[in-house]
Amino acid sequence: MRYDLHIHSCLSPCADREMTPATIAGLCALNGADVIAIADHNSARNLPAAEKCCKAYGVQLLPALEANTAEEIHLLCYLPTVEAALALGDALYESLPEFDWDPAIWGPQWVMNEDDEIIDQPKKLLTTAAGLTLEETSRLCRELGGVPVPAHIDRDSYSLLSVLGLWPEEPEFSLAELADPDRAAALTAAGLVPPSLPFLTGSDAHCLEALRTEFPLLAPDCPLRALLKK
Image (tube, rainbow, N blue to C red; front, side):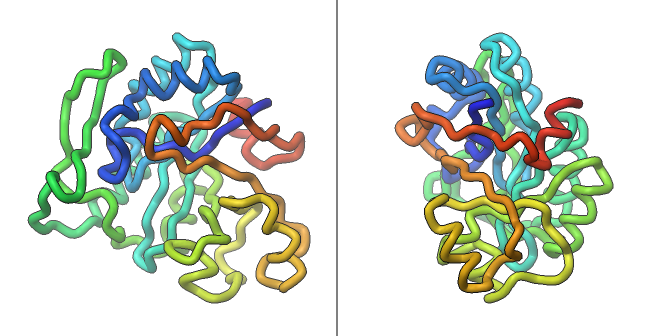
């Protein structure tokens, strides 16, 4: 099963406007993906359109979002259904602060339908830190039947290790994402992650050029496979 489980659509203000649900689904299918996750910042509102587009193109969608927790740690949250992802996104959005921001500087936030038509634009800036902590977000994700996964833990910003400086005892994680899978051995040898922790890697694509044309294979024992079966 060839995957890319970390892609941003035009709902994320930091993503290009060309990253529409239909375009992402179509290009990933053309490039040979079997399963993808569109994981926008603190929101899942483009997933209903993405689900329809993925079905039309023959690609499986794993519902997801990328939470920015109160600590400013990026946490990928994978859910069993689009409805569960929307519920988590609503909770995160409710906890976001309200302030004036300029879309011309930060970028637009487009909610789209399956025909790539803009149907809404959230008022709050989605890339800000939510009011929910890492522990609270992880717990809510699990209560909704999902799997929380610390994002790009090998990066110098917005990652669990860069913010906390160590791997926490709580909450526990069954999986982590690496921006560069070649760093897994070094992180494990340094004692920065549990010795048996499995990894996945995502493109974290914010533009069409960053979408993968070659895909890693999802491990047979990956904890996310239980969500795909649903």
